[in-house]
Image (cartoon, rainbow, N blue to C red; front, side, top):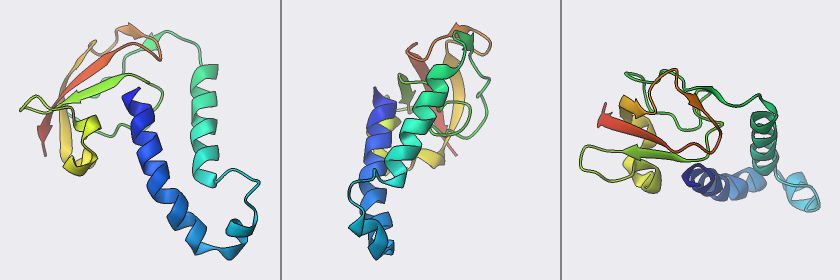
Amino acid sequence: MQRRAVIAAVTAVLVPVLGACSSASQSKRSKPSPSYAAADSVNSRCRAQEWPQSMPDVEGRPFDPLGKDLMCFDNIEAVAPDGHDVMADPGSGLGAWTVVSSTPGPGAKVRITTPITLELRRG
């Protein structure tokens, strides 16, 4: 759920910017924007994979909710040391965090919808 909120927020920012870059894209309103198409494509590829899969080992790595290791998971909670959910706070700078631990841990069998909690630290 939170992953979709991040995708929607990113899309809401990118669509006007991408549309302003080309007058041709503004005249073709019947086609979906490239950012929506990309999100649908990723979602389709993720759902087409065989599940459950092994939880990737993201511990000690920079937090990137849209990166290749986490892009297929719908239910990620990224918890800062003060307890707030970084995914619900786009102003916190998603790339400014490092994963300390994950629940479930690396190698556990998970599905797209499995709740995943990542404990983060700055830097």
